[in-house]
Image (cartoon, rainbow, N blue to C red; front, side):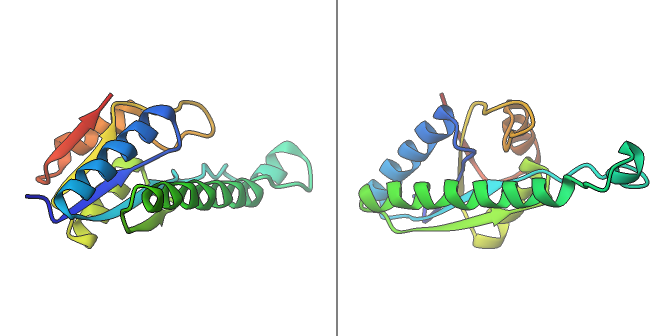
Length: 149
């Protein structure tokens, strides 16, 4: 039925439930699994933060590094969960992309025939996915989307 399932995660409880559901479905169907997380573009202030703030410190490179580190740790945990569930999974980190765009482009590039996502994720500076991103994926892909709660 579904040969390749893409599951989007941001590390939230709802995304973890979506991952568990996707792994159970993949195990039952013998599907391949790709786990993706996406970090949004970092806002770049005109003239550079250091210039505007009157300081020599520019936090943008540090923010980008923190996003990358967090994403890699998140994907490692998801891969461990997949292994524990008896499912081989590949992971993909998409940086500098809006979540819905990154999820859809990854689904297309890996040949996924089902996308699994939670109904919403975290908010604030550390957000990786938003509830509105689920709606955006639903609206902009022809691939079936399974939304979990």
